[in-house]
Length: 238
Image (spheres, rainbow, N blue to C red):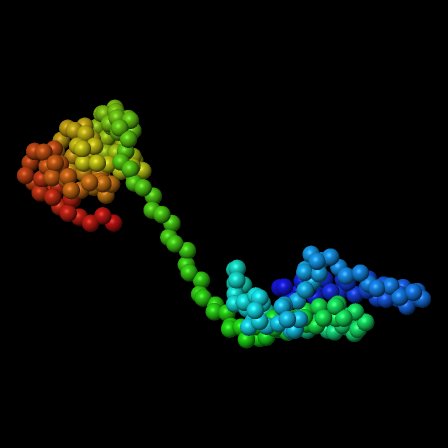
C-alpha cells in the first residue's frame, strides 16, 4: 500500500505545482524554487537509488506478506491499479519541468507496477470447508437436593394408599435424579415389598450411582423381590 499512498500524495501535489509554474512563467524574474524541508522530502522520497525500486533493492520493503492475509478480487484490484497508474502517467506529463516531482512520480509508478506483479503472481486462496460448530456442552446432572427429597418423602407419606403414593413418586421422578442412598429413603415410605419393587422401576432410570446398587437389596424381604430387583438394575436405561 506504500505505492498507493505515494500516488495519492503525488496527485494532490500536481495542481499546486501547475499553478506555481504558471506564476513563474508570468514573472520576469527567475526565482529559484525552495527545496522542501528534509522531513517533507523524506516523506515523498522513493526507494534508495532513485530508480523504480524492487524487492531486491536495499532498503526496499520485502514483498512477502505482513500483518493479516486477506482475500481480494484479483481482477478488480488490477483494474484499480491500472486506473491509478493512468492518473500517475497524466501527472508525470504535467510535471516535466519539476525533476524532483517527476522522479517521485516515476518511483511511485514503478512501485505500483511491482504491486501489480505481486498481485498477478499471488497464489490462489484456499477455500477451506467450514467446520461444524462444536456440540453444546452437556448439562451437569445433579441429584435431588436434600430439601427437595424431604418434601417428596413428606408428600408420599401424606397419601393413605400405595397406588396414590406411587402416583406422587411417578410425577416427581422425571424431573429429578437420585443417589442410591436417597432411593433407599424413598423405598422405606412404602409398607409392602411389592410396592417397593414398583417404586424401583420408577427410580432405576434416574439413579446416578449404580455401582452402589447392591445396597438396595436390604430394602427387600423376599427372595422373589430381590430377584426382580436384580433384573431391574441390570436393565438398560432407554
